[in-house]
Length: 571
Ligand SMILES: [Fe+2]
Image (cartoon, rainbow, N blue to C red; front, side):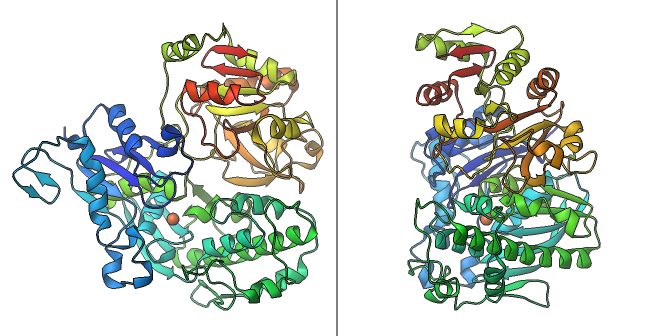
């Protein structure tokens, strides 16, 4: 039977990725950064494409289509000379993708070329999918919903910044959009920059600052005045405060915004004080108000109980955790990668389902889409470096024992996660009951701001015992922040943030049996089926992919325990 193979790409924005869908099901994918070790690289995902093709044991010519989550054709209608120095904004970007992919096909000089097809080789046709459609497809087609309302928000696509629509079976209909200069992602990035952090990178640090208990009423009122919730259910940013859309301006904000907030700008590396906490809290609140306004509109328009969200803005786990409480939606889905990186997945699924009518397969797609290493590959990596290791009989028991004795354990097992959040297979683990774990991990490997919290991983069916969440609560990708039950806050100090919340990761046996078993052993030893879980990387580097990366990170940090598959390495 003929299968439909689509190679999806995210190229042109930060964090290039490649993924492959077969008959509308994503089977593999990886960010390019994990292979080249160049964090959030914008380069063409040459190595990620190779990994994907090797994974399915096919050549590029065997793919039916290529899908890219960016459509330069949008510029045909709205050519803007300001953007013409940006390659993704010009028509010649159409050729960039093909150009890079010629490395994968026969390069003997042909006598003729018909666009992507030559006498000697067959380049699959390439679809350039509108950016927000790729986001929408990432949200809806990875979700378990047959029908759902869809909202996408990011800094910007080609022109769109926001889209509202509905998904039904294998179709997506967008019924309203917002375009630049009105952008929720840019709004958040503006304050990230104003507070002295890197816009487009450090938004989560600002989100962490927003949890501090300060009175932000004055800033809140002021920031509210810079935006307008419009009667069509969308929003506008007052352009006298925000100038991120003007590319030759050095800052995303105007002097007027600085004056509004007390004439002060944050300084990189400065220890945050009350002003930082207040601006961050006020801005987080306003961004939630804008998002909830749009979500309510969407509910009224679709009358559907299911909501699927995508776009980089929905990495905002603080907001995500409040949506079901504050709106009429009953079910919420946000994929393991709603950012642009996830658009290789979104564009591949869009082409499969919406363009080629492929029926949906509702079985869940996990984030474990990356490379897996065999026992031999792991022992080879150890042998090559003459590193002594111990083969473990019971990996989960040993891991839990070490953790409960206060050791920090780096864990490497199974297929690598696609998204930025490590979900147990490339993770650093610790016992969440031990107060000094946060500072210890920061000191030995993360080297990050002391106020940023670490996340807990917990057995899914036990989540409602420790967190204020309904029974059968799922948060498989750390996408929501929820309250820790008050009686457990002091018992779980290293995963409880200053406001008593935690960015929770629920683990079930189907998704990750080995990791689940560690949590079972933790419960037997400590009474808590919970571990502190942070990604296996040094701050600023990509998450480790291979045993070699794991060993490099292990030896370049203060880590003392590493479990690679079933091999324990101790310094
Ligand atoms: Fe985006």
